[in-house]
Structures are given as C-alpha cells and as structure tokens.
Image 1 (cartoon, rainbow, N blue to C red):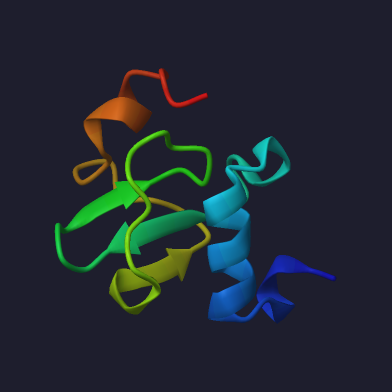
Image 2 (tube, helix red, strand yellow):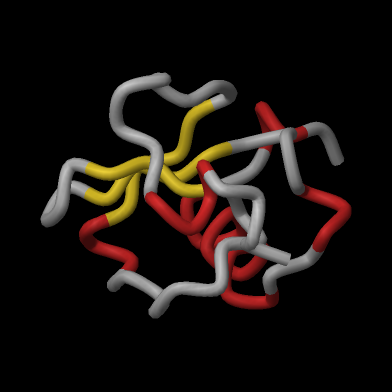
Length: 72
C-alpha cells in the first residue's frame, strides 16, 4: 500500500509504533501544539484527533527532539 492510500488511523498506528521504516516518509502535525514530528519521535504520543499527516514538514515548526536527531 502506498502512503497516499493510508487513512489517518493507519498513519496513527505507524506513529504509535515508532516504526523506523516510516521515518522521512511522512510527518505528523499536532494541532494542539503547532509542532511537526517525525514518525519515530520519542515524545508522548498525541491524540489522534490532534494529528494531521503530511508528506513533508515545515522547517519552522519541527519539535526539539526531532530537530536534534535524538528521536530514534
């Protein structure tokens, strides 16, 4: 299955599992914080209702853990 065919729930499962196969393939925007994260980010999992999934991330809103490369 291609990423463009994923549902939000499938993206969320990949995010929750912190599966490294998805790193760089999609990003999650968290509406409650205005931050973008990589799918392998080690920070607390946001609620699904607060997540939006994107093919790329904004350079100005990336989370501190993701921007330092310490997410894995």
